[in-house]
Image (cartoon, rainbow, N blue to C red; front, side):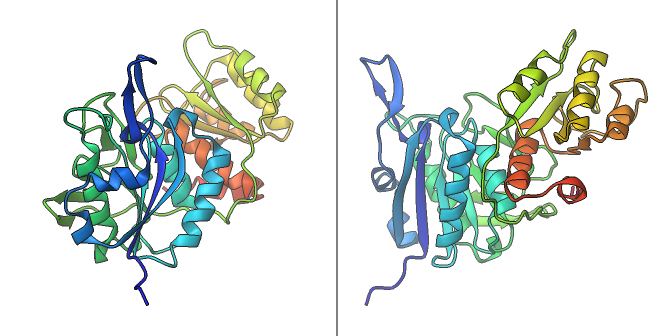
Length: 326
């Protein structure tokens, strides 16, 4: 009887699975997960692995409904293997990673990785990233650290990982240093403490949540359009420590009075949001109106958490509490 595999690889697509299509004039999804693993030197010696082609899409095509199905699949497989590696496009990787981090209840390491260079590139970075991700996923000290992103030899916690470069192979950084650690030539070293974890009861749905940007001259037109399209919750990409214009504040206040949860994040990469200013649109006024502060979460991650919390049926103080763990 064959032993159960130690590693399960779930392929969802992204640049790592793309090849140049001369007719289309650019990179398109074309490579299966099994074919990708065949390009990784030494992976067979590292672990027996099973491969699953869950999707083959650009990460821009990722949707919350796919997150929900992926979270269910990861939860199912986590009890059967020692580690899980998810191949994913880098553009929305941090959103998927954080959604899985708050919804999948397991000690089994779950590691996302991808590539900045396509599989057809003369010097692809995907094979090395897959090997490094597998090495981390199988490491004993990786257990209990939640979902991680491994790219360019660096290990990042899902909550703090963010893409910081559009093309460099060292594309990710931690917004709250230090990084969790590094992996080099098959050696793993964890050097940072992992962040407090948020655990949301497993969602049953993936409701619509929109991000509303704040900028000089912004009014509430985008907010009203989101509500007209059926948004069940809103994340405000505020400026500074969590501030908006008077016009946008009025729209937020009306949404809150109508029972729509509103989370305030910031477009500023570091520092988090906090109530400082008391004028209409300042952080103090937003909190007094009933908005929830995202603290260190950037707008896409605040949205992922709000989708998960609403999908799990949380509301009021229970929902707000999910954003207080930071």
